[in-house]
Image 1 (tube, rainbow, N blue to C red):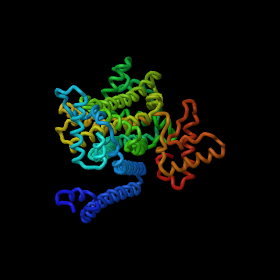
Image 2 (tube, rainbow, N blue to C red; image 1 turned 120 degrees about the vertical axis):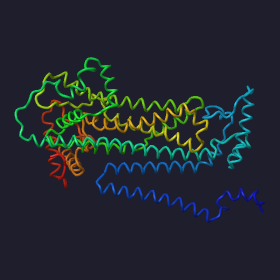
Image 3 (cartoon, rainbow, N blue to C red; image 1 turned 90 degrees about the vertical axis):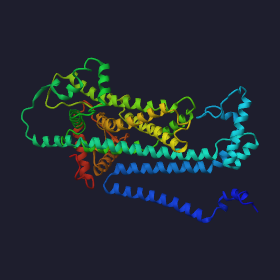
Image 4 (cartoon, one colour; image 1 turned 180 degrees about the horizontal axis):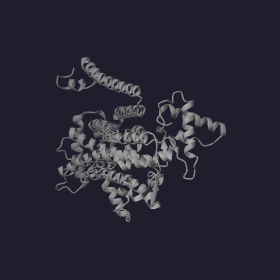
Length: 505
């Protein structure tokens, strides 16, 4: 029989010697919290479906997938913790690339002296934590690959990282959406003017430099110098990133290029639908982002101050993205001003993929995704260290490195929410293609179904552009393009179950 306070304490650490009321109470609490979270997500999904918020509902499903992935990662760590404990490595492997300096080599120049110190210190710590694997490694004169405490802390870090990323992404989209919602009054004013000008007189000829859009982006600095043009684009993202003339001109350019047959097209509603659809991509954690986490966990070496330097990476990328988006607007103005001295009627810009990096507007979305994740990684790592080791921990770093990291994180969050996301929402519509969100759900189904019928009838080998999520615009010389699109929309509306209420005729 074990002595009280002796072997009985060791036996009580296992489940077979733990009081059943403790096991039942802990399990009940965990199950209750899990069910509450699951039911909350379930009812939120039903609410989004009831309000016909399909993109946001798909984003919620993405969050559920991430939570499931977290659970699977946690399960793997739990299942293989015994194997990890029994995986023994030589103590000398643990000397280098440490987040904190473990041993001060005061007067010790030989490696075996330092190694002996390490074995003694690690051995006492592992034995105090318990674990048959640790004891097995110590008998061999080695140390486990990871201690139980390290595995437990890794559990917490992965969970904190994923939750922080979701929270940051949601807050960015909400704040950016609130900013974009302010443009709704511009859309309403344009729609009212379109109704009031139903009976138009003679078309007015206007000198191109008299348009406010051209004045803001072509005249003055940046007209004759590429460098000054980029500098102006860099500065403009910090104040009035999108003006009313910018919105009005890009809206008209989109309509005249992609849906000429419907001048009353609600561009703002379409833009919001596209933004909600992109949200489900931003909120997820892709495989290459997990690779990023592993790389920077590897580089968290004492004295390198890695997490201070990488804080500048998302800031630099964010400023580059904002500058590029502003420069796309400037390029649209330059294209018109350099080709025309006077314009009959309204100023119409020509959307093109050539204005974007590598001719792909989607690159901007991937960069924003990476920026938000990296910023979340910085903040999550800070709070994890704060709650796990304390503010004065060596792994936290010096105050001179901590404060700038937090300030940079706050700047990134605010700038991305109130400037970059609104810019992204409107400027990426200036590509050569438009998204399937240009139709409402019923018309989307009708268009895709009608396109498949045409494909089958004509025996085309290539699929319809809309099946890939984007519908190609007409070529510059294709005068029949807009009318074909309008006819496709009308036929889809007639063939759809309920195409009424759509914003496109």
